[in-house]
Amino acid sequence: MRHIYLDAMGGDDAPNCTVLGAVEALRADQDLTITLAGTVSAMEPLLAGADDVRERIKLVETPDIITNHDAPVMAVRQKKQSAVVMGMLAVRSGEADGFVSAGSTGATLAGGIFRLGRIQGIERPALAPLLPNGKGYFCLIDCGANVDSLPEYLPQFGLMGSAYMKTVQKLDNPRVGLVNIGAEAEKGNALVKAAYPLMEKMPFNFVGNVEGRDITADIADVVVTDGFYGNLILKFMEGVAGTLLGIIKKELLADTRSKIGALIAKPAFRRVKKVMDYTEVGGAPLLGVQGTVVKAHGSSNPHAIACAIRQATRMIDGHVIETIQSSL
Image 1 (spheres, rainbow, N blue to C red):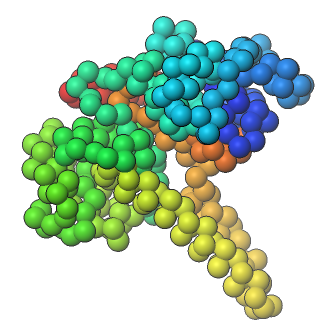
Image 2 (cartoon, rainbow, N blue to C red):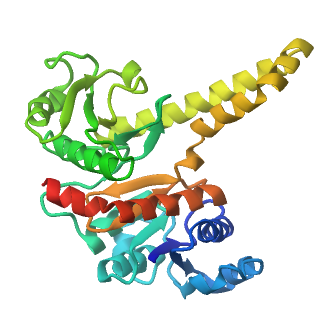
């Protein structure tokens, strides 16, 4: 039985989406229990139709709520009765096996560092979402936890990403690439040129530089970059996917012939949409802290929350933290 501590007040439509997502996750996994942390009076009515899983839900009142407008580090230090702080402490003490939040990214990062602590040997934790590449998923690390990175951080990102893909995605020898403006080792800015020889010395399958056009071309299972460019890549991919799907939908409805073709191809388009839908992945694991932490998208719907919880349980079952520690 795995136990997940969920920040029920985190996200754009909390606690509605978080509570309903928790119920969906519990119905899909009989070996799961969840603590819903937030305003109990707001959460309880949402469980009216969840009698089948109610006994596996624990409600905890957390009077302090951290918003996106709060300074993350200060909020974690001062709002000790927030879901983020109490959840991290629950993971640290072993009361919970993992923590999931769709709330403040900064607070989740600060909570992981100051309340869970870093894995020994890892200088900076990193966010590592899974993104589609046409044949499956690749791991982008870092996507925003460290907007200013030093060269020695990037090999550590590669090591953590490789461990994650081995344990969660079941890849025997994940290919690790470094984002750059050219394939040659001498290309790039000072950061990547200094990081390249460090990456070559690491005990993972380093395949060299990965140019922007090749990020989704299935030449690397782990794509390493600093948080500034990683966040740009992530949001650009989200924007392009949304724009393309919008254009396709518009053109398919443009005339009668297109509508007939769209009707025939509807199952295929539904599959494409599912592959491109971030809600199917759920969230980004925060790798490098001493516990399982998953940061869900702020606009997550109930299904995305359920998928984030599932991702946390897969990390627990795959012993991701232990694999990173043993790799070091």
